[in-house]
Length: 254
Image (cartoon, rainbow, N blue to C red; front, side, top):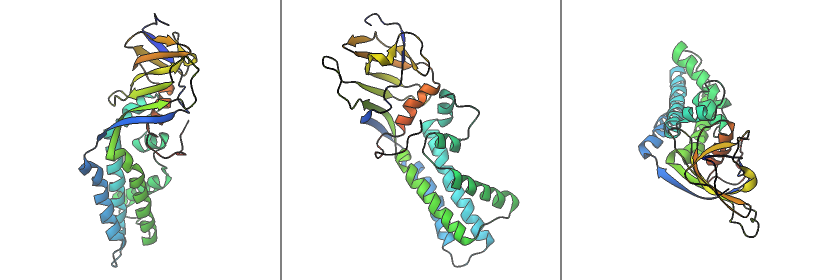
């Protein structure tokens, strides 16, 4: 493949590969901490001895403010709507649906909280019992803690390595991605198995515009370029991205 075409297609061969490094940038701590300001007020009100429907309604409103602040920050930092378009997900999913698709949240309790908040705010009724309010206080705390890792810093590039030894006489298989959050079309480079690389279009493969000609060594191919378009194959990158630096066993949506 010394005289490779300008464009190659790559089958996502890295689904079972292991993390082997990443770079990151810090997120403004004031932005990351905003949600907790709402949460702390809700927690304080939920513990007040002078409970009434207005107090309980305020707890619900402040809890939803905490969720909304965190969801908005995630959307802004990761350009989640652009990711949804790049991955060609059908319809116009809201940010919470996108986070669910990525495996970052479990949404049922949060959507229930939103429904209650809408009744409280728009109809001035529906404040739940204090026990329910306190349960939602815990739920929102877990939501914030589970997403802290994504708003404390933002991973900008990451590398995956084939855990199984490559054949003798060829480089170890690895791939690195540098993220462009404006387009969600990452830059890619690495030594990939030749079976995963094609000069002709393949279904469920990433289309790569090459920066330099691809090179072969044994059964491996060196590729460096930028993903040209998204589609479902891009999910194999984004799902790996949102698992970087997380514990083994974290659920991945395929």
